[in-house]
Amino acid sequence: MNRRFGNAQTIGNNVNQNTYFMTKQIGDGFLAVLADGTIDSVTGAYGAILTCESIAKGIVSPENISARMEEQFKRAAALLHERLYRGRQPRVSVLAACFVGKMMIYRNVGELSVMNFSGRELTEIKADQGELERKGGLILLSSQGVWQALSEIEVEKILSGRGHPYRKAQHMIEAVNRRNIRDQKSALAVIVA
Image (cartoon, rainbow, N blue to C red; front, side, top):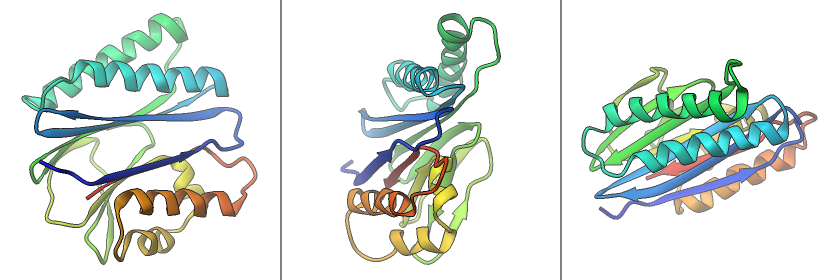
């Protein structure tokens, strides 16, 4: 299936936090993985990268995706403990979403956001994991940095109207940057049509 998506990211000036994301085609599905790591900018960045890479590497097909996500989230947590945190509690938020046909299967641990935009209304998906049958519209996967800078009305305005999801993601991050907020967290947006 040919899926349209877009992404954009900006590194904020909060020295205790950093984000990373990756997307990949898996069979006839599409996988997006986002992570937000905290402690300091270097360790947080490494934690976010390690988390995304290990989860994405372990998901190679859309079959039994919920179970695969659970396994890979556990694997990523173990790697964080082993390589980075050395027994301390990891402080990495992670969100993985797989899009297959009209379905989105997702798992979210921490403070990243999953939003469904119907074309008129933005709805937060609050469950930590699940499946959503998509009936048009857009899905926004984002970090806290987006919501620190922009209101729900501003996000709806950016998502509405015509245009490719890539341009919408770029506009969203440009709007975050224009705010020039002190201690702005890194902002990350992945938009899937």
